[in-house]
Length: 471
Image (cartoon, rainbow, N blue to C red; front, side, top):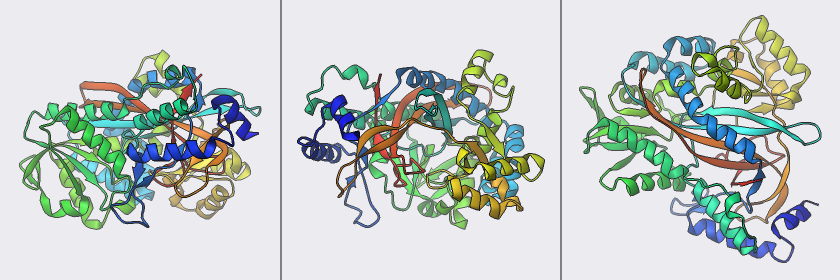
């Protein structure tokens, strides 16, 4: 049945499937849709998991969330520059979660409302459907404000799908594959910050892992920056390296003797990325006048507790006009605080009674942390009498429609299966507490996963890169 659907839509069949899959893998590797892997040498690249053909996606909802992204950029930026709001949102989390507490301490120590900050955001969404599979709307999963990945590879995945559809003899599909310039739009965001720093000799610093596995995505963004500004230098350093080569001269940040205009983090969003000495490095960079992407405030604006805060009646109207607030609020699902007290107790009871209707989310990024069903139930039972529960929120589970595609993974047979798609919308914003100088939509990303998987992170090993086929 599933194979029949792909045959009727794209012309795939038993005779051409193997050849098309090999063509797609070769194209992916030749175009850099690849990554390092932990079990092989650092010089070896393997294909990133991909969907063989683009997945159908409703034009109406694709355009809606794209149109709303600049407003969401603005809201997150304003919250990042409001100490009162961040403290209100995160007071209980700070008590329960050491990682969030450390970021907030840096925010308090280094707070400078006049300092420019750069946001390269990605807001993730799932289509919602009723019990019959009919699509009823689109709902936000989360906001990513630090190390939002795969903007570098998303445009090439669109090109891959254009190539595959051409090989399958499909016609008139170009208008169905929306243009995606995410890598160049994100690069322009970084360049706008570099320009605003107003020192042509200053460099852009990528703060990266000791070993970067998602290397092709990161390098694609770096090379796009250099394509626009050939005289601009990009440094790549880990926290470990920065311990010995980062210093402040007055308010200026210098790394390896070079002044830094922009600090762009591709690491630092989970506790495992830090050794004790690295917190001092993060604070040192935050105290500098270099433009951080993200600043500690923007990092905190991406937390689940802020997402919950935005869901409260009247909050969005503080930042945007009523009609925009109503459209944004339509994207949200119910979210519940788990702090100690009556409201938290009610939320836990509700989740324990209906564990399949909710997802339990910690203040973590990077994939692999959300809990559903029995896993949710077991963890809640273990922490319901502990302050540890304040480090989580409860969110209504979204019911995305299931479609059919073929997932390609290295060294395995093509997997024709039912999948669900998660749409990411990129945005860029540059400004300080008072003024906004850049605020743009910056392309999109589609990631898909088997319906058996609870997560959609590609770098974390759960999902596959995809692209939308608008209909």
